[in-house]
Length: 346
Image: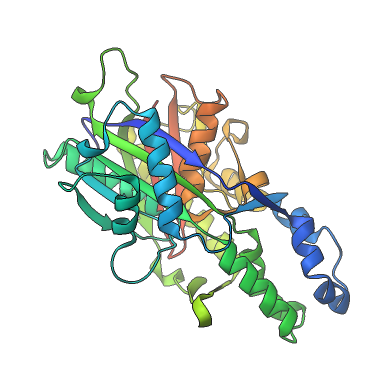
């Protein structure tokens, strides 16, 4: 998977103001903790996640996606009517039909001559969106497009807390629900264009190349769906998902080196999907990457689905951890299990 002329012209993330600490969630679960004699601080200790953000109750994924779309246009040299494709790429969607992209497209104020559709692939959705736009640009089908994702983890976390308090579960039975408590909310958007459209002297954040690997025999390890009354449900075999996930990442990295010509020493920065401290440590050890070159946001944002990796990239740029000219490896992985790694020259 290689790209010729596609560049990320602008990138913007939007985070909710409301923050729930891991201690706040444990306080809501105090009856469960007392009944099962669970130690306080367990959630943060096992994940490294201190807090996660949530949109106000009633926020729709398209609302969040639109907020990010407006934010990226505010940073861009492009006008809304210049977008030829708009993709909504989050796990969360407003409804089955129509596409959530239609609602976000309207709220952003994009033009009528714009192809609109959803791209959904668990936590890889946004990277799939970048690849789709990059391929369309290189094929000469379009010159410019936008991909956005708005994740709303609040309904899942609230439903998980309700279920854990109402059901008579033992320590083993609560394990499949533990990962739900790490989920947060946020939004991100990027404008991808042909390099010829960039203003003179503007940096070229080039999509270089990438690699993928899938192990769909593990698709049962993390499954989420809609529950009753509009709620969300999800169960995860966290231990097996970790083992299978890092093995898929190892195989993807081997392909990534062949496709890009990069090696473990080439990138100045690694940006990984944000799950937690244990996942990050195991991933970097297994693939043989330098953890010191990682940039993370899971500590204060939790796992924000497809938003996590690109929002972390945006935060790394904002913090000066990724600078113009840096080679950056985007290490994406999602339940399924699917892995995609992209090389970007910032």
